[in-house]
Image (tube, rainbow, N blue to C red; front, side, top):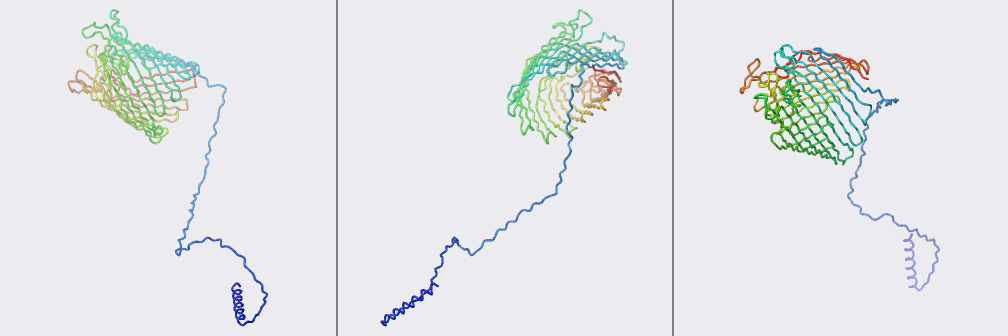
Length: 570
């Protein structure tokens, strides 16, 4: 439309010019309608249009694979709470009476105080004796008498314990094939009187120092000789022990220290005098002081445990010596305590007393020149753990170097070869041990232990009277809470005794005559029938195999022994 208007105006302009040139004036009047369009603006921004178009990116959604699931709710038995007006009755006294073959009377009584968490006290007394003999040997009667008093105070932050005891043990040195000997000529009696007290703190918060202090006293002596003028010619010793320990826990470390002072005064007869050329008085003052500081740390959520320290020991005996022993142990728990391997290094000084020696072999002579047993080094390793919730095990091996190892040999100087003398030797000892335990709640319990020993002594070709192989088994079975069965098995082999003349099963080496002592096979079984909570009856059989094995050379044990009796509570 705009162009048409412009062209029209140009035409009229030309015509007008031409008309003026002719001197004619022409007027044309035209009526028309003019429309003006509405203005608008482009809304798009300018952009460069590329000739190459990018490839479109296509996104594919992930497909969710749903496996069919099934939820099964296991039923849980609701807990039951039994509300009682009073606790079950607690009986204060327990009495056991019995009689066995070989005329063996048994009496035992146990008493404790009221049901109290704060105060605990009680007493225990026991008597066992035998009037039987061993065919072909000297009289072999014996009696055992024990009395024990105990008590404790248990407070929130500490515990105080006390214990008093008196033990009397009479027996005969029957290790000689002569049944015509009188009992009085070979009778011995040990008297043991003592007590101990212990105070220990138990603050539960981390960062507190906990400690304990203990005191121990013991008097041990043999019977007086029949002749009054020789009343002082018996063995007597006094033991005093003072000990203390403390530990401090901070973070993952435990710092601890133990201090022990042990004094033992041993006396036999009168010093520098004698009742014969070979039997002279002995006085030994034996003191051991040791300090053991250690550090224990826990890592890997307590799965890894390391304990390191040192044992500083002063030995004031015949000569004063100082020893330093290592303390190192590493443990690591695998698979939630299923397997726990461990390895360590240790050592120590053991104080030999006449009481400890006679507890091991009661037929030992009373005049002993005792020495302390020095374990210079003891390296050990092993693994323990659980095979299931009912079965646990342990397997270990140790290698030690020992000085003054205690051995027993038949005496030929002071007796009729019915007593033993204590000798001391140096050597290396290897021990391999394995054990397994099974427990089915409180119904069945079984423990089995096997050990193998290898001795390499310096002066002696064998470790006299000590076993090379040992197997111990214990089992307990509870049948309906009415019948209780207990079984004990003990087997020992590879033992040798030192003899002074060639006999059967002897061999000579380095001018020493060794006799094989044979296998120890000891089986004991007891059965208890509980009529109710207060009354029960029992029967017990010892040495059911009937083997009169020799625990020590020329000292056989009694054959089969059977004992029965009753127990009751009130």
